Length: 162
Image (cartoon, rainbow, N blue to C red; front, side, top):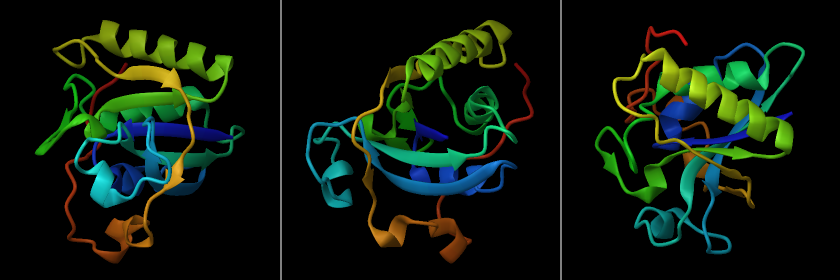
């Protein structure tokens, strides 16, 4: 199965998901915008409408889509609109790009659960929107923190429960 998520700079999101049991593959890229074949130099300006995103291939026998989403809500701040850490702009927004009605319902359920838990002190602003074409990012972005272990990230898994 596939999950497509945006939670700020895709380097840190990818690195954390690659360690999750049941995740088979990860790829970073751009989705949710209005420019065909966007490149990083365009996306980083915020002018394309795309979000830095990650496409996750996972084994549903080992990890559910809801578990993927709960982990997602722990590794980034879903209460900051168009921002993660020092990264500011719509390209760093929090979004769940659902691939079918089942994923949409699961996303709405988990978002409501996270909000009701009070784990985050402000309202959750994560978008839940239909998946659009995913454009893989340039090669140097793929597996970036594997290649550059001291590279930039503003992501970590918080010790919170929903």
